Amino acid sequence: MKKQFIEHGAYKPEYESDNCGVGFIVDTNGRKSHKMIDDGLDMLNNMAHRGAVGYDDQTGDGAGLKFQIPHDFFKMALGNDLPSPGDYAVGMIFLPLAPDIRFECMATIERIISNSKLEFIQWRNVPINTTAAGSYARSTLPEIQQLFIKRNEVPKNDFEKELFILRKNIDSAILNIESEYIENFYICSLSSHSIVYKGLLLANQMKTFFKDLQSTSFKTAYIVVHQRYSTNTSPSWKLAHPFKYIAHNGEINTIKGNIQKFESKKENLESKIFGDALVDIEHLIEKDVSDSANLDNIVELFTIGGRSILHALAMLIPQPWENANYLNENVVDFYKFIQI
Image 1 (cartoon, one colour):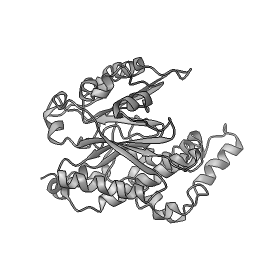
Image 2 (cartoon, one colour):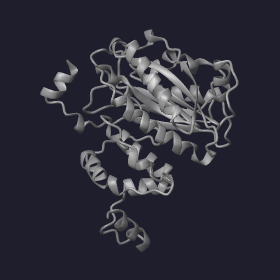
Image 3 (cartoon, helix red, strand yellow):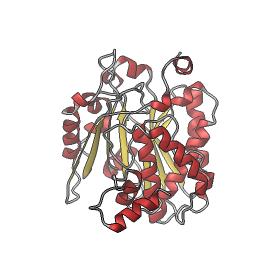
């Protein structure tokens, strides 16, 4: 029914955009604590007015948290010896509920890892309380699994790059599986330093839904929170908190043109860091995601590709410079160069 509506109705996925509330807290001394989780959830709850609620008043547009990987918690939860922090990565993954398709997705992921420079460790079923979610959220609920991957002999400085390539290869392979349930698949995060917990949830449902967040051993030194308010999108688990690198509050009206411009230049991309790997990546920009997610995709690409976060953002969100006489000549030359 949804697919038919998209194909024949007025709804156009390419015009999706969003506007929402974001915030962050950080301990400038790098001290990890569970209080950081609680404070982040309090901040998220106080931004409830920034989120939309649908016909089911217990289902909103989604909420999410990004924070450091809680190593001590995972070491205890898995009951075995994890590698040291930084020597392994954790993926937060939404999988189809249909068992046969879910197992095919998981087997595909393990196969792709085995063909990479990295090593599969294990899966972890994320404990959740489904009664905390609204009826629509429950009806579209994915299977939520965590994936643990070992760095092996990959240099630490190259770990995030290899994870980026791995994630893109997984995305391409999963999208080629012929099933109506594949739209429920999404990699929320895959990193050696951070993890995203998100869902088609209201702000005040996050802690009750994700049981992990209740553990006092679940600690971080920073947290980024996001309460989604979509202006013209259909809410989904996938679209909640689309950030892996940034937290964007706004609406990018030129996103369709931006994507087309990027795709037209994709064949000219070169990188000393990525080498030939970029050529084989089918979707550098994820399919059917929001304007904020598109921006996050390219910030991630540029940052892992060697640019600083400030350099990447200056390229992607340039200030008005054409008639800005107050700008340094070098700054103007920079903006002229990136327009080429």
